[in-house]
Length: 392
Ligand SMILES: Cc1cc2nc3c(=O)[nH]c(=O)nc-3n(C[C@H](O)[C@H](O)[C@H](O)COP(=O)(O)O)c2cc1C
Ligand SMILES: C=C(O[C@@H]1CC(C(=O)O)=C[C@@H](OP(=O)(O)O)[C@H]1O)C(=O)O
Image 1 (cartoon, rainbow, N blue to C red):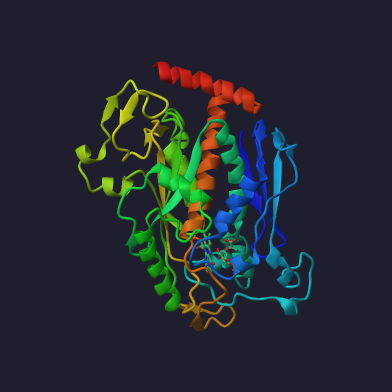
Image 2 (tube, helix red, strand yellow):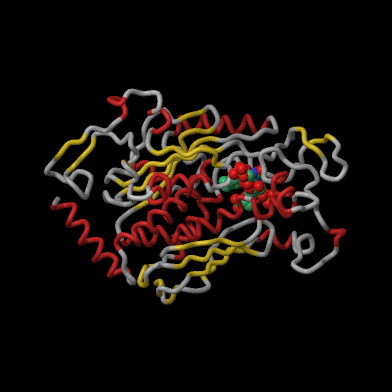
């Protein structure tokens, strides 16, 4: 079974990702993994921390001579900022005078709920783990899932469809979205330069006014065949699994599959994707085709062979340079919420992290369905299934 977990705090020594259940013989491309980490660090509106960090994956186990060996994979990503926090957050007792309290909880962050839950006098330890710095480790794990999916010719990419009020006003093609992965600079990860300029203006306004901004990213899985996920049990439905994977990311507050949001206000004839049959195998795996993909590639909790399309809706970042009202933990007096160096917009970065979560979910289900202890065995099993649906 493919499993992954992460450890590490925002200003601790490093982040760790542990990935187990990958078959042997998957090619591991260090440059690709580091490029994924680089993509997560980019985007217009990120804060000063991204100038300190330069994330790279230090692979400790499970990979030899450039390939997986079927053993658990441990990956470490250094926090360069640790050198500034070594005395503030020591593992041992340290010097209490060096403690940097987060003295008044930030509305929208985990500060108050976490302090109440874990009985901390201030929110320092809360944000250390609640912080989206953790998504770095998810991207490292997700890069391995993408390398596994490459064996099956399945790809995952993302783009930004909204920042604040600025929206991409047309559909993006898979080719446009995929091309964003190779761009040398990521501004707002939008396929349309005019829409991207409007998005940038939204971030600029938030920057100028000491505010923050959210938006919507879209993740697309390309090349997956029909048959991943099942309606047989509630917790095996692909849409539910992807919703949880994406919703688990920091600041994601809603998840949409296909055109799920607008579908609720439309007629059935406007929403559902008529089915056709063509001898040209136009979706790559079967001769059953659709002219549109409002379903986002999932019907009945099962992939239907079209691109799988999932959107994540991000609330605005909660740390504000012009803070909202809050209450001091120690005196209980009304004061301003704490301010620490912060991002203002993270929609492109969250899209990259969501790609990882989606890739991990699809890779897990693909391994369950097709099985195999080596990449070769997995591919043989997969080819057998593709032959079945091609001949259907
Ligand atoms: C890539 C990324 C970077 C983030 N950076 C910040 C940040 O700099 N400041 C902040 O207050 N929140 C930031 N967040 C959001 C918080 O981590 C998140 O709002 C917080 O953990 C509370 O969780 P919730 O929003 O899911 O309820 C970021 C989120 C992501 C995905
Ligand atoms: C470190 C990352 O994001 C951090 C996420 C984050 C938060 O509260 O979620 C707060 C900020 O932390 P810091 O106060 O250290 O600047 C962001 O920089 C990262 O994405 O790698």
